[in-house]
Length: 108
Image 1 (cartoon, rainbow, N blue to C red):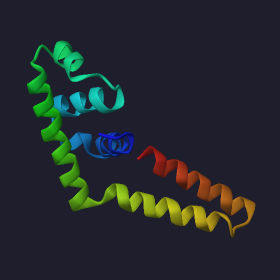
Image 2 (image 1 turned 180 degrees about the vertical axis):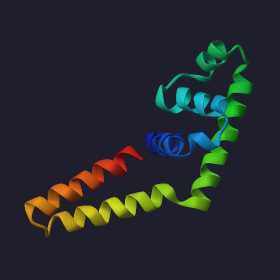
Image 3 (image 1 turned 45 degrees about the vertical axis):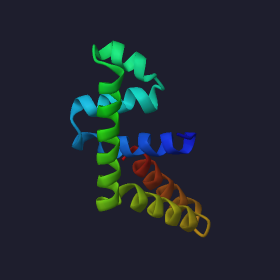
Image 4 (image 1 turned 135 degrees about the vertical axis):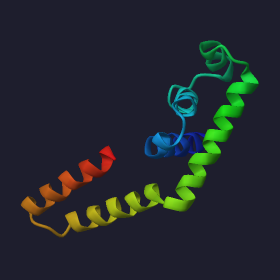
């Protein structure tokens, strides 16, 4: 798995982790965000490497399914791009307000 794929899964987990079990979201976070190996995750959770991999794979599949149905990540990126375009043609006050909106979108 390349770095871009890991970043994508990490981002999907940020958006949709509340739709997974806490256990699934946690293992995905350990693997993709904290860059722990399957062995390390297994040891931390008193499970086998295979069990860790199964939980991560099932959770990752669900995250991709959520995005394919809801498109929240894609829609947010489109909004960010449009706001950035608008900022270039606005006065400073409006540009600052748009920057505040971008910050709110980043927190989603």
